[in-house]
Length: 133
Image (cartoon, rainbow, N blue to C red; front, top):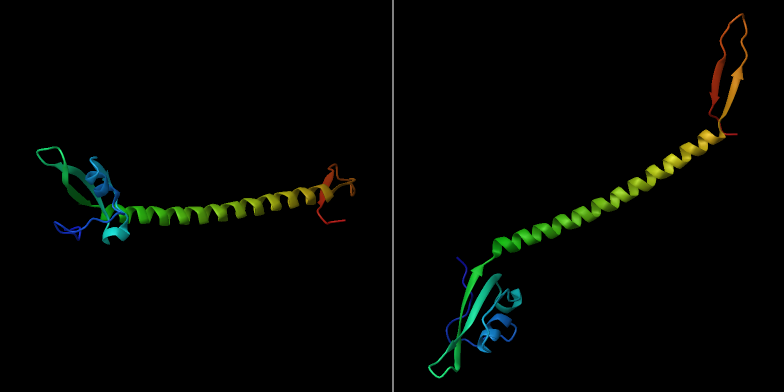
């Protein structure tokens, strides 16, 4: 179990917008920056009023979200790997296009030669000359 490292009466950080909002009369919820308390949590806070309706404090509760933060970090890492793979895919596509263009050029530069029948053959032999000229 993780606890927010503050005690009753401790001054609240101005960086904790949830608690500051509650002290200003609003029920709030959100994630204070990690730097404020040194832990990851989702907090909810509401103002406490006295009999005259004046705000005399705030009541807050925090939910441990360490697992959520770990999942978010994993997602960021997977996105980075995905972006890297997309870069490789683009390089492969460019190389494949270049190879395809080179093959087309080779085919354009090749020539067809017809060999006339000889030695009493009735067939026509077609050779593909794939040598560059």
